[in-house]
Image (cartoon, rainbow, N blue to C red; front, side, top):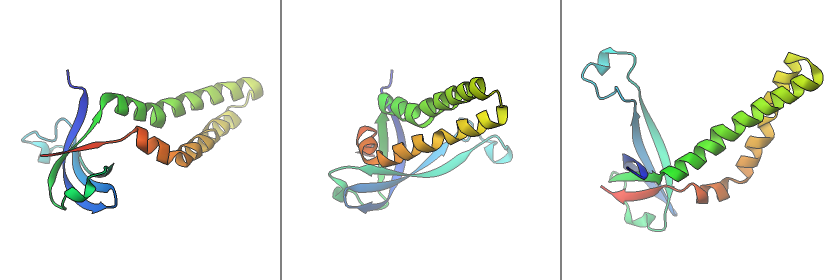
Length: 138
């Protein structure tokens, strides 16, 4: 079983300690022969920042593989989707029980996400260190 999630990409640019890599994210059916005639195929170009000590050894246009462990991916999903979902549901239920007003409960539930994402933004440097990608030459 694979313990890494990997994507091939091309180095876009290099700055101090950061390599920007362009990856083409495709859905499962994007490689199909009739994908150009089908609305189901999906391709997205994403730029990934990879922080590494040997950033100066890479060159723009170089093919690389960006990878992360499954634990890193699970942690990112938890921070980005799991905790906000639980916060949204809990605040919705609690406010609905206290007020009995669905409109107020919905607004409070949505407003409860603002401080959460603000705290994430404040902790972005620490999170960046925990959720690091790695680069391998292709």
